[in-house]
Length: 228
Image (cartoon, rainbow, N blue to C red):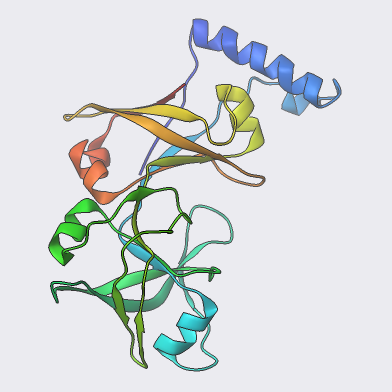
């Protein structure tokens, strides 16, 4: 995980203009403690392979009445890595033995893998926005109490950036827009078509998968930039 603070010269001027826009959106009433130029804290995280389960599938895999338990809170408030894991079995009968579940539960079960994982399992999975699982391949999930055979739901989540409304104003973007992520490292790279996802009470965070994070050596990055 890396973070960067932006704002010098021309960028500072743009920040001031954006701050004026924010003040107007707030009816011109901004307290002195809030009058400083807003510079967001950009965090880029590697989202390793994981599973989102429906409540029904939690009970099938782990037993009736089971609720996911928190192992670690994630960066976004209200989301967590669970203590519970499942085995994923693909059509080649190859498996990923212990894949972490992320909570809370969702209406539909979804498996998010990197391309390297899908090749190993023999799955031809599409790159999709999270939640868009129609027409995607399925797999078998094995838990300590049961088995779930998914007809669909295995995707590679497309690279995306979570941000709040204030961040969207700062960058001059809106929900579903596309941006670029520049990672400066020994393997400097620019990722195109980063999907913007705007929501209330959301922290600014880009999600890459393990293949993308390893390709740009994100762990040793000296700087990251989010560009319109």
